[in-house]
Image 1: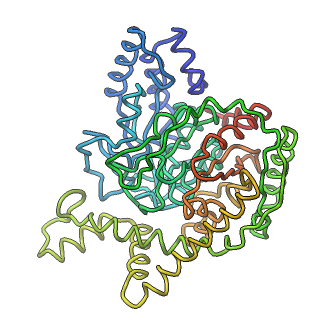
Image 2 (image 1 turned 120 degrees about the vertical axis):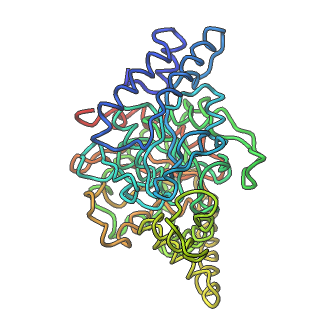
Image 3 (image 1 turned 30 degrees about the horizontal axis):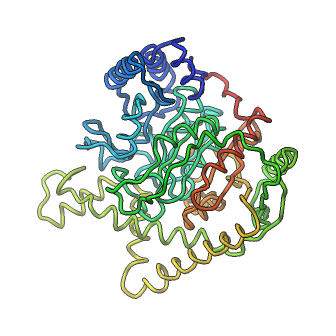
Length: 483
């Protein structure tokens, strides 16, 4: 049962081969048995899961149907879940139980999805390795000595280890696509505004976007269908119709124009990954795609711009965690200033404190124009590069990451080295574009991903390309040893 994809589960439930309750119990037992090796879950919601599974079975017995009705999933632990701990991977919110459901959680629950628990993550989604979590590092099921990527590493590790078929995740600078690449999954960051951020604890509000992590493009289409849509509670939500993402999966790639930026194949890219990307290009050419070299000249400025904008927004967003209303509160504060200082000093980890300080500095008087304003101008140049490129091509292809997953602790003493691993992913967040990572092979036994980028609201095209690629390759079917 645990090897089934979301699509296979939907067919099995429809054909009454098993019940949602049976499947849920199997997966809960598997999580209990195997997750101590991975540390991919922060909270298990066993009682809720059984209750939701029974309700889904009853709905099916009454004639209802739906791809997500009775399907087990998990939520990254920054989506608010009513009455359940929503920690954001932090000590600051270790005791916080959300009083409401995030829109994504509510929509998936209404579709009949079964919530198995909340997955581990980098603290406040700040990290590329899932090592900054207050609850400890997550391990990569392909090699337990390596990181699974971040910040959605818990969701990625759990799905890759077949503890569940799919999970929600979020992407601020690559936090869906990079863990997908590191764990042999398909991960999709939708267009900014396609998925509601209401009830999603913010890191950087103009960059954050929720999306699906699963083993196949077909499964990502199913989960995104349940997540996407306009939300009047979210002022950044886009009022655009949601297409049937599964309907276009079978479309031909004949004549599809794929752009390959020359800047992607620089000295910083592992040559073994470069070769796997070229193999992917050749496979897509066999399916009828036309390849064209393009240029994204401002890509080199994206990382410094991102690491000004994101920390600036984080310093603003995280100012609400002050020990007064909710979250961690220090013992016996002497006065209000002492309450603020000690609550925040005790509640935030080193990486979060580092980014708050960088952001506060960039926004401070005398530095705003020199740093934040200039970063926003670079952001516009990055977007303009993509708009020019999409006048020539339909999608853009390249590596998801410059290197395979590194060993746990290898970059802890050099945070800038970890930041540089986001070089291929952050441009999509700066421009608000949809991006997808899909399995493309292995280097030293560790998975490698290929990234696809498309114009706004063209998630369906990304899913179509990935699905056709996966019909003709078997990388996504590989399972880590022991799971």
